[in-house]
Image 1: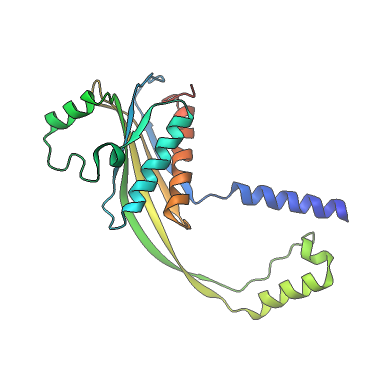
Image 2: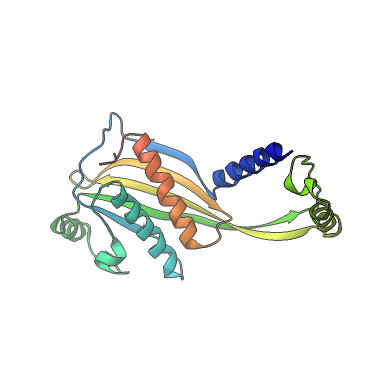
Length: 211
């Protein structure tokens, strides 16, 4: 019985570890693209949210993840401030980027945000090898709560993101990815998952490489 219990707990741990609130919905890359040696990558968030922390978190986490791969990366908020390029013409903006040594830009755009109301019914799940089945009081308490607690409503916020990688030597689009984030506990955890998710895909698609 102890062996069964530990197997069940191990499977539960794997399931929890595999849970994520973000997923990739679409990707595109330029034909015959190979990893390039960028000297300085700017992460630019285009996020029209009243709460500035969302942009800060999204940029900061992606910058840190890029540094983890060995790239020199900077946040647009830290490098240029919250009004970066707002009143600049294209020529002046490109010139400023090149003068700063930026040779690649990764954008983070919030395409849409939706709130959904979902009903969670009260349900009993059969799991004969679960831990609480092995102990009377744990079994009684768990099932009591599930039987006598009614269903409830939750409100989820879904974020729809798009990130593009531009090579500034040509201003050409090299890579694009769209993702969906849902049930995020906070903007920091969402940003952490987002950065890890898209960079893993960039390495897989041979857009970037671990140095």
